[in-house]
Length: 108
Image (cartoon, rainbow, N blue to C red):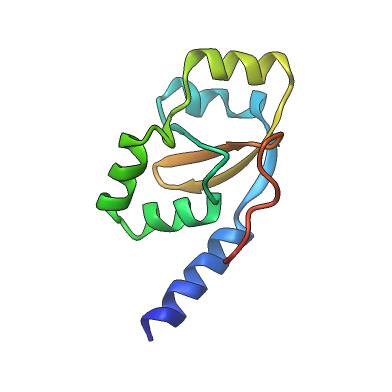
């Protein structure tokens, strides 16, 4: 039963993931709600772990600097490049992954 719930939640997250211009996300960045997800991670898996409130896994990614708040230099770089980024919302967070280094997130 838990596996079905997990799969359903991951599918829902995948459907809610999209590409958007970074310039349209400035208010989330200004509020400190934009989380940068490293290219080595699967955005859907990260969003799932956030949604499942898996503090242990999220803390491990934070400690390894694989996720973290979007930095000022990164935000400026994306803004100047008019970059498209992959985005998924896991309230209150906006999880962001650079489109240029990550392919379409998977549901695996």
